[in-house]
Image (tube, rainbow, N blue to C red):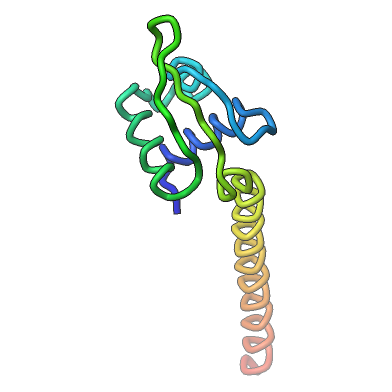
Length: 120
């Protein structure tokens, strides 16, 4: 399971790859797509990319183009299925919330029925 930083970085990389299985991006490109309110640094980005690589989401090859650091990123099978897994996880959470609400309503109604029966 990915933490919030890794999820944000993976989402940004997936967006930058734009439906292909790989891309060439600079750290600044990735940082510009990440949410500004979380204050990501290049070190945090590198740590997250290394974690994603060790978890099997992508392959990262550091490179240099015209003196600027670049990343050659190739998405693996888990990386290509990232958005689908995110949607599934969100749907699972919504289902759990719905079931909890249904259970609360059923318990309330059952309590009212018991109160009516034994109040006599």
